[in-house]
Amino acid sequence: MEIKWLMFDADNTLLDFSGASKLSLWQTFEDYGHACTPEIYSYYKTVNGRVWTDFEEGRITAKVLRPKRFEDLFEVIGFAPTTPENFSKRYLENLIVKSEMYADVPELLAKIKPDYHLSIITNGLKEVQRARLSKLNIDQYFDSIIVSDEIGVAKPNPQYFEVAYQSIPQPPPKEQVLVIGDNIKSDILGGQQYGFHTCWVNALKKPNQGIVPDFEVRSVIELIGILG
Image 1 (cartoon, rainbow, N blue to C red):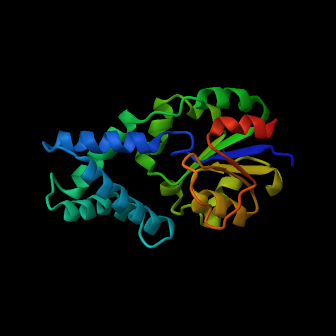
Image 2: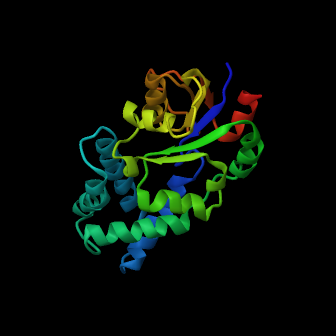
């Protein structure tokens, strides 16, 4: 297979979103005079996952998503440090500050950039995704950055991949595009359904839910071996 264009998911593929999210939640509770706990963080992961699924499947908008996950969390824990809107704003500010990429990412991007077009395809929020990539100084590697919140549609919707596909002038045939991501549904299934090849970054060895990618790796650095 000849690959010319690599589409990378951002969170938990190139960026350690899970780590940054945990630190940001802790910091935001502290900013409003309360202590976070492992139990609260566990509740948040459950609530956040549910709300993001609703967003990715088109049941709610990004505007609703921002406060709703904290509104739902506050209902579960029985108290509200501030309004969901205020908490969301501060959490996103902290997320930019706390964001880090995985250790192997700079090496990977520097090695593959001379030979491939690179894109970021992310279901993140517009006020944080570009700011995080800029803070980490890796936005320079990408020919295009597609943020779901900016275009009004999210992965795995085919319309999202259509925008991504058209984001670089004279895109190659679909079979020359490889989607790399950690989410088996939004990245891998979405990419497959649009006609792209896929590489699943499955660091936690999760079951594939019957969705079979072209490649499966534990870390994005393994992509170098796949690309040759």
